[in-house]
Length: 416
Image (cartoon, rainbow, N blue to C red; front, side, top):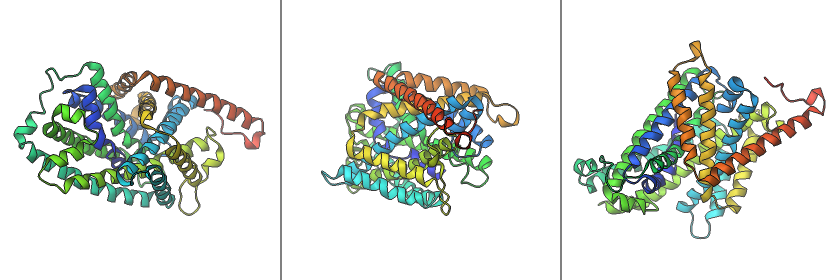
């Protein structure tokens, strides 16, 4: 639960309220509700599948087992490429809050190296680090909520957030776009489903952890958004680059603003640590099945982690941090996340009997929701994401054909 919560309560909560307000106007809370419904539907599908397949890999494994190897590869590849971009964005976000002027990229690369070293020692240490970071961030967010509520005039001020109509209301496209932004912040529970081989009693632990982490994040996001609107107003929130810091400045607690900046850096670091763990486990599962180079499937004999996958992932993220401006990659990353969960819902629709824990209607809702949110993304994100997925499929076909020519002793696993 800590790993999933650390992924969701990351840098997103410090910036998404402003982005959602720009997209949906006074309907931003409706966008949050839509995102929560889609995320819950996806979470039930992921939890149900994780109980049946308690192994590393998440939706990559579920798609492969339920829908065939190519569909599973699409899910795994979408997760890896989308979250690699997210990792670089998280590192740059950390640097934006923690690094002195001119040192953003070196500091961002340094935090990736440091957190990879922590994860290299095993998931238990990663979870402990995540627990500490989440605890600090939650305390700061609660302080912002309390101070902001007082500054807004208590319950009377917060009640002004409830009406969502009027001239400032956005249209349906804006609401869906804001929901897509919120969904990007919710997506951390996928990390839990990838940890099937490294937790006790995964059939019981993983479903409970997913639902608990998602519920806590939803309550927190709703409270933070309500306070931001009540204190800053919609125009102020829409124009803010750091809404929680601006809320802190507007309160009677002057020390709160720098504390929020520190918490934002810690939140980005916590999300980065959890995400490094999840992506490397998906790469591990894909390498085991021959969908990625098989040497990435090595597991450290002492620490029990996919050390080669972690090191290659970290190297790729460091290169991106040092060379690429990833502000425009958020749409691309969102596209990958939505494709990933669409496959999860498709896989859940095929489950029957004792393996079905939730109504099929939830999986249908999750699938339709993912497709609807994906259609609201910029055209460049949809076209670019589809192109990279196509390149991955072609590259996989070439890799497997080349591996097959080396002889039966080096042939990758047979297709189901």
